[in-house]
Length: 139
Figure 1 (cartoon, rainbow, N blue to C red):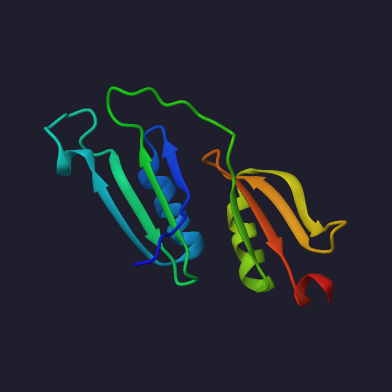
Figure 2 (cartoon, rainbow, N blue to C red):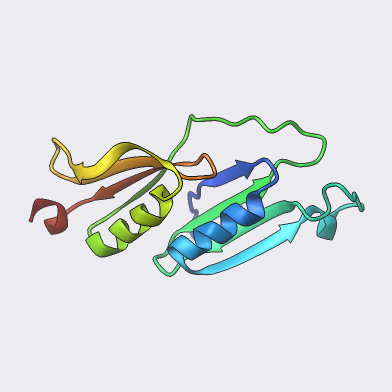
């Protein structure tokens, strides 16, 4: 298997809901493992997600997990997940779902470099950038 670069998101107890939401947005196969499945029983954290992986029909992988018991969740904004391509309908569909119940910092519209681009933060606090390139952006 070739090396891959995948976003890995951390959550404060709502990883299951977030990863299920992303499966609704992107489709694909979602595998979730809990701390209770792999470690000593801890009633408080047994049902929290130790590792989640979503593999989509479009060929990308998104991973995420809850912060492990005993660790402190520290939200950050030093990352974003970028979606780009030339399938305008697909990318606009992702945008509509990701930006719903979230906040839009850059509306999805033509930018000075010619692409259609937008940036939003979804309802789980994850920042997404959507860039539509090619004929769809230039048409």
